[in-house]
Amino acid sequence: IPAASSSIAPDDLQPSLKAKAMPANVVMVEFVRGKTQGIAIETKVDNDAAWSTAGSFFKSPAQLTIAASPGNLPRAVQIRARYLQDNTPVGLLSDTVNVVTTP
Image (cartoon, rainbow, N blue to C red; front, side, top):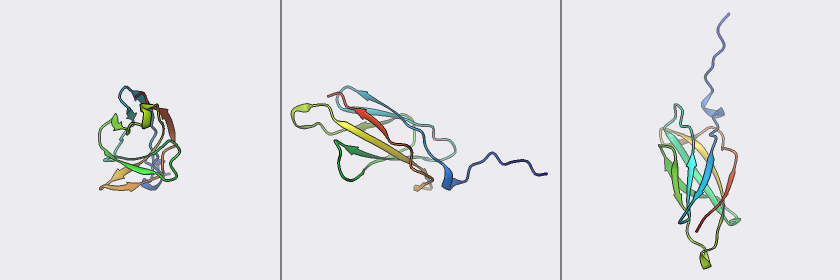
């Protein structure tokens, strides 16, 4: 009887994110890279209709700088990510995490 494989198919990989607001509209996003190259992060700010690419990150934590709002008020940010392999997104999108910036 062959041993059960503990590896997960690349199409089934899903990052797990933790986000923390820092001063000056900075958001730190923690992730575990595992055997992938890193993650590609997308954001939505203040209920934007579409996701925007925040960039590719290869070390945790990723540092995102969110543009200041008019009046320098806090902003609601939704964050999601996919793993990168050979600079190509693979696997499933992470669950969306929400954070409010600190101006």
